[in-house]
Length: 413
Image 1 (cartoon, rainbow, N blue to C red):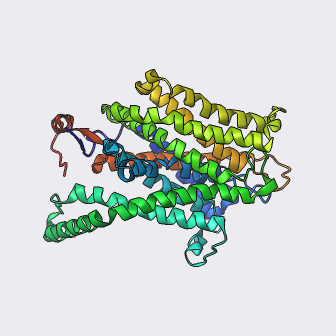
Image 2: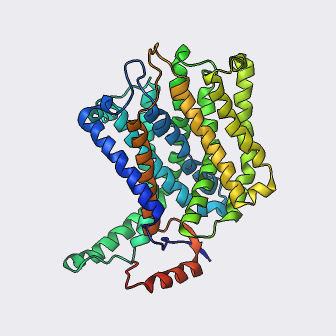
Image 3: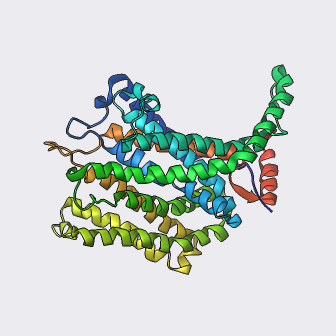
């Protein structure tokens, strides 16, 4: 029987030590950024107002967290019960992803201590305001959606230390109350999460439409909001597959291929819609001529399209969709394609002023981005080892608990 259960595995491994070193390196540069200012760490200037942190940490981060709303739409709104096993890991990935995005915005703003202004200084005509408000509300919704997993973990298992053990029963009653209230209202948050996601995913495209001729013609198009939404939908399932296969390998758990293969079969039609919209827009606007010079910008566009077109054909193969390695590679292509798309839109194509110095992210910028990603992975690993997120076979869970308990006394709950 398959059940969601905390993963029983060693937390510290050689790979985890590497992630810790990367995270510590990023924290050092984060400290410099907040103490000495954004100019002390980045290569940003008056000519280049944003760079890697907006293109990757925010633009790509929002897109790659799309697995949360695509899985919620599939599992809950469309009532495809077969896919419920992927909803919790996707929810956790989205929750951590949006937390990472919010922190990236906080880091990138020059006066970071004013990040709360949009909460009280509303501007209904601003696309950026709509993105900010939707992201903040959706991130709150994700944490609320995660609450039943927390209550499930601790209801009936509250065991506080002796000096506060008298709180065991009150805390348990409180958790049961929260769980019962959430059970009655969760459908509201699920629907709200899907709606909010479609709003801010597309509004990021609107933000770049407003840039007008400051953007390169290969990417500047009136349908940019639609393309941003379609690309986010297209990367949702690949991100779920990629994360699931990585977690399975890391924790030595059998991958749920019976679910992931079905997701893989859906991918070619979804990618096909996005590719058709992208190429059709090029011909309607007659901007394909900008590819002909084969300069650096044109090559970035070619790489972006190749990374999306290749998995379109890969997902058509049953051999690929039924293979762990095949699904992993095809999913990685889609993720890389959307990542390059956001870098292209926010960094490569966006040239607001004549910059006498070509922008390239500094070592500090790269370190902060990699450090935040490493911290995100470490937190994900810790959460799935504490809370019932990943679905596992009940017999495998029991055997692993017995095996680990042989190393010494251990309290699992």
